[in-house]
Image (tube, rainbow, N blue to C red; front, side, top):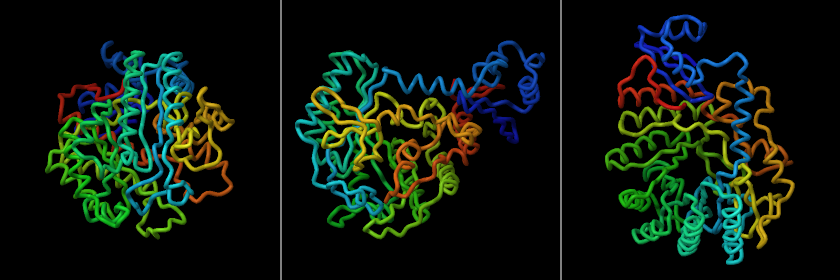
Length: 447
């Protein structure tokens, strides 16, 4: 991609995710070299930089084949072992857009001791024989911190297993953050948990409208204080912000408040998904993918203004798969021992396997995930953002299209980056130019 600016040109490669800044006086020389590598416009060293960023490729290099090779290498690798373990379907919140309300998940269900035991056996078996470099475990619900003791107990045992087999342990909790006391933060850290995903849908104005406690009480103030405490004690916190047409300005006020408190968190903006048949009668308006893409970059520019030191490294690590659900060693373990590949499948009858004492007994659904080819769609193969999206949401491709009916509204397959890639490149470049001196081919990310 070539993006012309008033003082120079940005070059971006979606395959390598390398970004080059070229000042005005050198733009023509670089562009001429890209058209004709045999020209003597640039030095040998500068040409090598263009090759490292994959701006220059050999004539016989097939980019789609390279992308497929890279994807399959990652998909079938034993270097990574990832679990999402659902501790309970119960929750202390009554969120207006919650999809679990309409897929008949039992709210009183909790993970049994037997499932926990089988889970630990399965983890140790894979650590011993597959010898991965990384074990990643996400604690999920419902609200997992309703079972704080279970989280701490399981994580402590997983941490010890990783120490035994010399494997890096990476753990994460998806939580509403309401129960996150100071003592709990200490206990979680001792158990090896370093990161939290917590949702704030704006300030009190909209968050408390969208995410009330079960008794109807507001939740924003408590969560915000808990996040502040957790960050100050060294936990990494990613704040998920669900955006509707109505709460956009309130989300900016949330950014203002985080900036004022100098709270070091990571942002993750997502569009609110409207669930058909939601018993709460949620009326706020969902943004379509193209609308959300425009709003998303406006929010990131707002962060650049309010939190200029925010480390915007969007293209730092290329994604080899859209999500790990398509990978061989990625599993979602439900409270009853059913094994799925995606969080979105929870509550569905067709699962990928059953967790037993001897390991996971897989079903045919597991193979559908492992044989799905994200490059099979001709439109996707022609799309500039294919290296990022890898065919879009795999749930839509693998699961949704096989269902005769669904109460969960099918989201758009394409990702927002299809519509806002140019703006994201400009945001990253702006961050890099403010934080470092750039030359004719300053590489800001990728490789």
